[in-house]
Length: 462
Image (cartoon, rainbow, N blue to C red; front, side):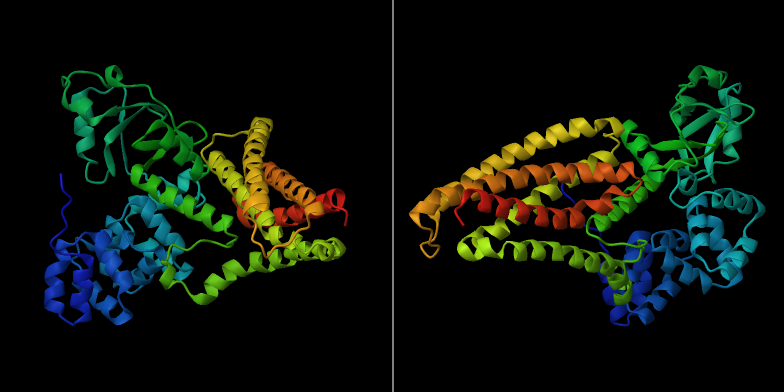
């Protein structure tokens, strides 16, 4: 089946607003998905973005807000009159509502809280007890549940009253009188069985769940492992508090991936959900500069090593030709190793008892890769070396041995270091992703020079 493009696109709306054709833009808005409206809003200059807000129908407005970065959504909410604000907040899911409340300044948060209905206020209070990045902080309380002693007829009657408020009806959870999770049924179970059938006969007794205090990443791993449409969230006593739905899981995955990528690149501080172009230069500098300064000072170690071996370097200047390659080989292989280990850790594939297995595996990988690269460089020295690099025949064998052995040891050691540093970081309660790329590159730069220049001093008559 061929892909089809929508008749109206986000860019069409942007073009209409840029040209000042409000009438055309008004016709386009109802035809676009709320995600496209949010994308257009993020693209437009401030004045035209304000015009777009006036064109969005009330029935699209709540979903449009949920597609925006929290900071933008809060800014828009703060400008709404009370009656409009109350109507919008009433339509937003519990988990998104809490995210917005947490982002608001205290004064506006209290005012918005006052506009909520009593049931929504109670649900928001419950969710606000949990950390933003916990399972409880990501769950919604708008789930469907029935008791095990009900018949299908009684269950359907009970669900009719909450159908509009429930975020997910495809999974209906079975609980006892105290709210303890007993399992779940599917909507089709209610549809295709006799009305007199008891829920107990249909209950699958699947109680896979996560504690509300657990990290959101644990919830995500569980949903991915078991291919779950929704994940029940329980309190310490096993009572069902809420569920994390598949769309929330996608948001968690995006946040965790972004966090890992930024930390591996030495970007610190809290991640913002604003787009790259909408974040300020100062904000970007503040998040990046710490690691850059730290690594600059650490990088002086490499310079100190070179200075200490200036006699060997000046005796055979050809050593400098292969120095950057040996250092880079260590950084690249160490970074690869760290990436593989951090990924395996994030997926829950490695535990505290995996250290020796990881070390042995990466040692063999490094040994093979180092051997292959070493042989390639030795061949280059003998057969493909530019004529401008002059090495006397008496030193050629020793020089090739120095480069080959340095590469073998450097790649093997760097691969091992790259694997073990994230594991060690986790053991001392540090974030493994922070250790991964910048730190490893800086460390193996220094070790590579030490390996190379020490071998040169040992093998060559310098």
